[in-house]
Image 1 (cartoon, one colour):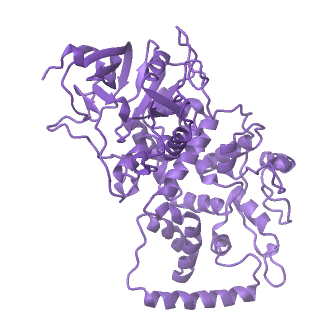
Image 2 (image 1 turned 45 degrees about the vertical axis):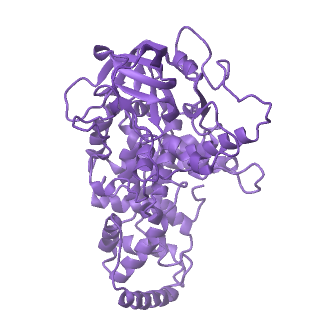
Image 3 (image 1 turned 90 degrees about the vertical axis):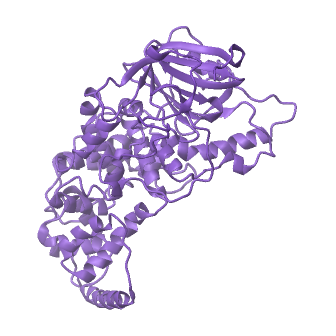
Length: 571
């Protein structure tokens, strides 16, 4: 049925807006030129894009689909590009339906502004601007690249209908709210505070972790801001002069963005040392370890020789206390053996979840003992058990923290990943879930894990290892013009091709580079465990500067693994 002229009103139009489709199983060009428009249909505003070759403003709308097929149903299958057991999982049931994104062709779409959830604006340091849109239903929209400018004008036109509220975490991300936000009678159910819509939530997180994580809190903030406004006060709207939006200008040289990128100094040179190959000289006459911190530092610097690995692992994983005597360790072994077999008799069935066998196999290989393997695995799970919780909240948080670190280290790489629907870093999911178990050789994993078990040099050092890998691949990712699928493919093809020592040197250099930055963002400090509130009387990171300088000198000279004397440990 044709729409009448009275039902259609063009508010804004811009040509030269390219849509990047990331089309699967196709050799077609994935950059399609077209128009971006704001229109009113029967009085309801919508944001629309249509390709040049199919410019029809009044075409009938159908359900948005990225697949060819009958019925126009949305493609809700997430193809992670690797083993399905590492995909993000969720069993929360969907409670409500959102208005679907609509289109009038394979890629054209019409999104009611009431269903716009977030808008991310970004640009390459030497390239064009682009926008990434997310609907409230979690429907992913391909990035829109403005080859001829126009993003500022579009944002100003959108202000006529919606409020664009900057995310507290990322100045490039705006959460969208209607101008008439409502007052106190508005229910929390309608606000959908942290609405866990099953697979809908997962897809929103994969597409945009910032909007998903902070969206609920921003909704509540907006709710109370509207509710507590005096009756005579006008509803707050943002003007073009508002600093949170770009200034008015006919030209578009680029956004003045608030980003996590900081001025970092050069990366220090870092060297690795030989593995720990002496043990007895670290023990006193009763068998106590005299200097645990020195041992941890040597392990962090070079790992452990095969002959000592079984004994030292028991300490690193909490099987034995560091201050226990040789006699006490004999008693501990006897007690733990009895406890293990008593529990084993009571077990009728055991559920370890997917991925836990990856964690157990290296431990069993090293200990060659069922009881010791169980208790060492128990110690390991103290560190990573949250990775295997059904809610996946810990994994989402780690991906968010990884994104925070990467934005501080390499904003241009983050912009590129954003432009290819990969800004959520979901391709790193398997890395973090099982601590890179499938990325390195078996022998390398033994070394990597014992390095991580030292808890040096900071919290979340495994995230810096991920940053080191990504930085080593930045030229390949950006220079080869990868899209979402080929990024996923490239990352998974790194398996068994990475040099562990190079990655570890890079991760430690990144840590020292961030540590020495005098204006490091608080969010980055929090991820690394370096943030101390101003009122705290504890030792602050700044007071550890001299210790870090010592470590820098030590990293350049190489680790003195042959020296068992106790010395200052990593801060």
